[in-house]
Length: 264
Image 1: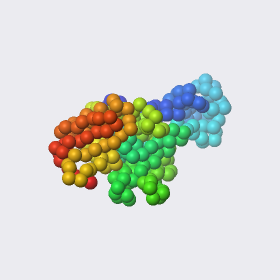
Image 2: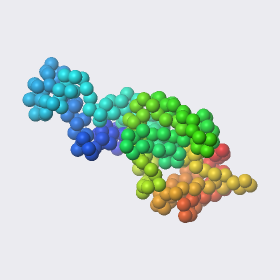
Image 3: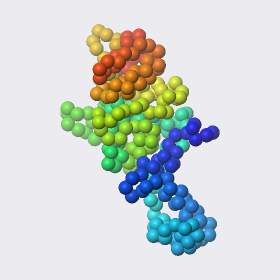
Image 4: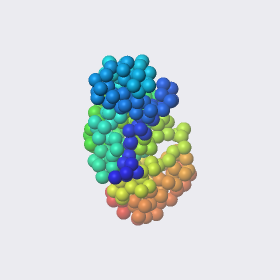
């Protein structure tokens, strides 16, 4: 098994903390592991460990003497505990994360200042598939009721910001989607059919519109055109039918929609 067969590697997750305090958070991850392993193995304090490894004692004092963890390390350890790190296509955790990524694109968001995700509940309300995905992921969440003209939201609570960073590593957009040049997650390119299908069905549950007397489905999206084309190609591949792209919309033909089965 190679790293190419796994997703959300620890260094990738750590690097979501780059900029600001950390120039390369992956280095901090490595330094923490080296320092704590040396201190454990040699029963050494921060001063001896800093001298042996040529690292700043001020940094190691927090890690070794006080038992603290830098934010990237805490995030990686938390993700490992949930089973979100180094996931493979056939892992149940990946199924949950793939569904949540689709929901960020089609009915959710990740706040760009703290990475906390939120997911709008679709027409099924409390029975929305995103609830099942959150429960499969293991992440605690709450359902927040909003104004009558706005959909209620499912919001991860404990460790929600770590989940948001994991989804970002997988390719979910961070911040307002309308202001970004979006691309579909790269893991979909070589993914098994069931992974692509899960993403598509989650997307359609949130975004597809039916028209009375027609079997066609319509998706209205204010997104960059190459994203719409890529999404249409994915839909056509999964549906094995014709899908067309217009200006800010996608039309799934009646044959393709029937191949997909009943969306609503």
